Image (cartoon, rainbow, N blue to C red; front, side):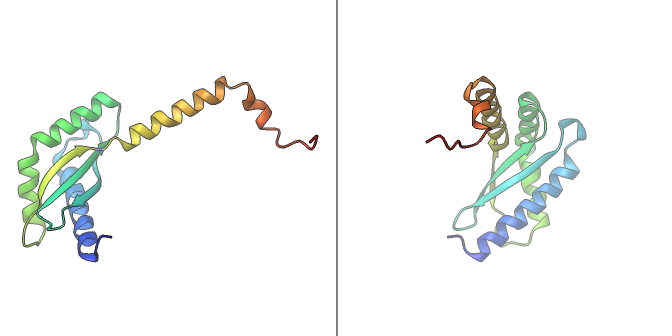
Length: 128
């Protein structure tokens, strides 16, 4: 179970990184944001899950821009936070939203194709 310090550092990093992204990345890339931050036990490294709005090619383009600017982001974060060590950042594309959208799409397709879909809506019968 994470301790209070880890939780505070994760939230601090998430807030500051979102602010850096808001300032540094052009609107043309879409809304680039940090969806989650994970920190190591010693707080020397952090995994940053990045998401953006748009289709998959647009998301990949935004993620490439983040990776390209990683050094600059790391430096700005070091100036923005007061920690003994600024965690070494590792950026990862957060695909949870797109995976969730795909699952919902598949469920919708199954519901449309199912001949039982309409009968199930009637509710239970008492013919047993």
